[in-house]
Image (tube, rainbow, N blue to C red; front, side, top):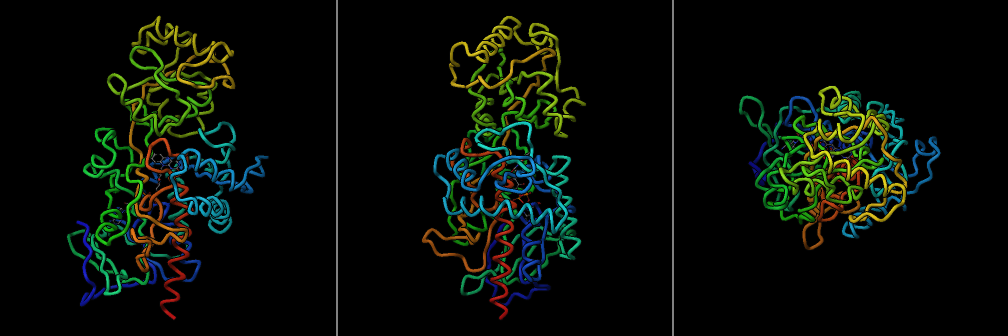
Length: 469
Ligand SMILES: Cc1cc2nc3c(=O)[nH]c(=O)nc-3n(C[C@H](O)[C@H](O)[C@H](O)COP(=O)(O)OP(=O)(O)OC[C@H]3O[C@@H](n4cnc5c(N)ncnc54)[C@H](O)[C@@H]3O)c2cc1C
C-alpha cells in the first residue's frame, strides 16, 4: 500500500524537521548529517532492528583521494574515479551527480571515521573490475553488518530517534505539493502519523518486488533475489504517484558468483586474481573480468543456470579476508584437489574437458595466443595446486534505477522542476550505473547510499531551517 493523500485536515501525532524513511546506510548517514546540521530528525524503519541490504553487503565503499589511500601509498583522485564510473556505464549517468559524489565520498568517509568512530581502511590486495586505483574502503571485518551496526550506534549516540516496526505507507502533500508528513503501520495494525518540514526517501529500490522486477529487469525475473526483503519499491511507487521522473529503471547490480546451494557471496577476487568460470561442459563461456554484475545473466544463461569458478589456494587466501568466503569454506562450498582431473571428478564435470580448459587458460597466462572471449590474462599468475572450485549461480543484488535527483539529492519531475522538500538517496534514487547491469562499477551501491545520504541529510536540514525561519 503506497498512497499519496492530501494533508488537509490530517492531524500528526508527532513531528520533526526532517523525517527519513529507511534505516539502511543511506537513511542513517542522512540522519547523522541532518542532525549535525542542526535539524530535529526522526528515522522510521519497517524492521525491528535496522539491517536492510546494507547488512547483507560486503560493506565496501569506493572513495578516491582519501587519507586511508595515502597511508597505503595509493595515488587516486575524484576525477579518475568519476571517469571510471562514466566509462563503465558508457556515459549514461548524470555527469553532475557523478562529479559531486566522487568529490564528496572521500571527505564523508573521513567524517564518519573521525566524528563517528568508523575505522575504515583500503582493500589493498586485489583490484575490482573497472577501478583504475585500489579504492574500496571497508571496516575491519569487511561486512555490511558491521557497517550498519556502527552507523546505528552512531545515530543512537546522538539520541536521534529511530521508530522501528514503522512501515511507512502514506505520504501527505499540501496544496503547494510539499510533503507535510507520513503515515505508517505499527505492530498490532494501528496507524501513526509524523509531520515533517522535509522528507528523505532512503528505503532502497524494488528488487524485492517481483512484479516490478519482471517489468523492468525481465532477464532476472526468475533469478535468486539476494537483497533485503523490505526493498519493495516504495520510493518508486510514491515517486510515480507524486509525478517524479523515474530514470534507468532497468539498471541493476547482479552477481555471477553466489555459491550454490549455500547461497553465500563468493568474492570476485576468485576471478580477478586469475580464476575462471566454466559451465557443465567444463568450458569457459565469457570474459569473466568484465564485471560480476553483468556476469549474473551470463551465468544464468548457461545450462541449469550454474557455473563453477576455478581458482587456487593463493587466491583463496586473498578471498579469506571476507567473512562470507570463510563461511563458504566452513559450509564445505569450496572443493579442493591436487590436479584438474581430480577436481573435475570431485565436481562431477567432464575430466578431459576441464583439464583442457585449464591448460588453455595457463597458456593464455604465459602469453600464448589470444582469448576467444577477449580476456587479458597476462598479468594473472598461473594457478598452482592445490586447486579450488565453487559452484555458483547468478543473482539480483539490488536495483539501480529510481527517482531522478540532482546534485543536492532533490527529487525532480520530468519537466525539470523539483518536488518541494522531497529528497532521495541510496537505492531510492537513480544510481550512477545507467540502464544496464554492465554499467555497475563495484561499490556504486554504497557510494550512492553513503555519499547521497550525507548530501540529502544536510540539504534537508538546510531546507527545514529556512522553513522554520
Ligand atoms: C549481497 C550483497 C552485497 C553487496 N555488496 C556491496 C558492496 O560491497 N559495496 C556496495 O557498494 N554495495 C554493495 N551492495 C549493494 C548495497 O548493499 C546497497 O546498494 C546499499 O546497501 C543500499 O543502501 P540503502 O540504505 O539505500 O538501502 P537498505 O540498506 O536496503 O536500507 C533501506 C531500509 O529501508 C527500509 N524500508 C523500506 N521500505 C520501508 C518503508 N515503507 N517504511 C519503513 N522502512 C522501509 C528497509 O527495511 C531497509 O532497512 C551489496 C548488495 C547485496 C545484496
